[in-house]
Image (tube, rainbow, N blue to C red):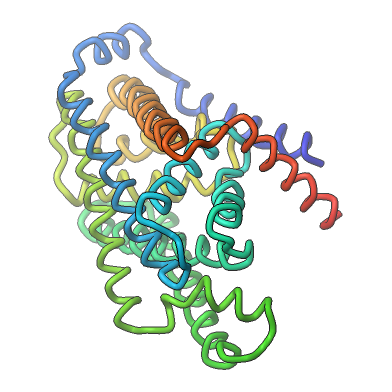
Length: 317
C-alpha cells in the first residue's frame, strides 16, 4: 500500500511538472533567471524563516496546557516537522512533530494530532479568507472562487463541530476524550480563538512579504492583494498529495497564479524553482541547527517516524 501511494504522489508531481514546463521558451526563462536580484532573494528567504519563528510562538500558545513545552522546543518542533515534510512523502513531518512532542514533553499523540488539526484550521480560515478577499479585486475563475467558498464552508463547519464537541464532551471523563480536548482547548475560549486568528493573519502577512521580495527579485512589484492571489492559490494546490517538498505542485501553483496576474511563464517558472529551492534550503538549515541544539539524531528520528507510519498502516488495513 505504501509503495502504491508513493507512486501515486510521484504521478501527481510529474503531471504538475509537465503542466508547469509545457510550452516554455527555455532561452527566455534562463535569461530571466540570470537577472534575478540576489539581495531581494535573500530578503525573501529571511522573512520566510521569520514566519516560521512566529509559527513557533503560535504553536506554544495552541498547546499552552502542555507543561514543559518551551518556546525553543515549540519552534524546533515546527522547523523539524517541516524538514520532515521536505524529505518524506505524504507530509509525514506532521507525524514526526507528534512523536517528538510525545518523547520530549510526554504529550499524548491524540493531543498533538488534535493540536495540529487546530493549527491547520487557523491557517485554512486565514488563507481561504485572503483568497476570497483578493478574488473580489481580480478576475478569478468562477470555479476557483466556488472552490474557495466551499473550503471556507468546510473549515467553518469543522470549527462548529469542534465547539459542539467541547461543549458536550469537554468535561467528560476518559483518557481519549480528555487528550482530544487538550489539543483543541484553544477553541474553547473566544478570546484565545480571536487572538490566534489575528496572529495567524499576521503570520501570513509576513509570509506574503517574503513573496513580495521574491517577485521583486525577478522585476515584478506586486500589490498586496496580488500577493494574496499567489499565496492562497499556492496553499490550496499544496493540499494535493505530491512527492516530498511538494515537488511539481509548488512550481505549477506559482506559474498558474502568476499567469492570472499576467506574468509570463518564462519569468514565473524559473522564479518558482528558485523560491522553492531557497525555502527548502533555509528551513532545512534551521531545522538542522535546532536538532544539534536538542541533541537529536535526525537519521534515528526518521526511522522512528517510518516505523510509526508502518504501524498505523498495519492497524488500518
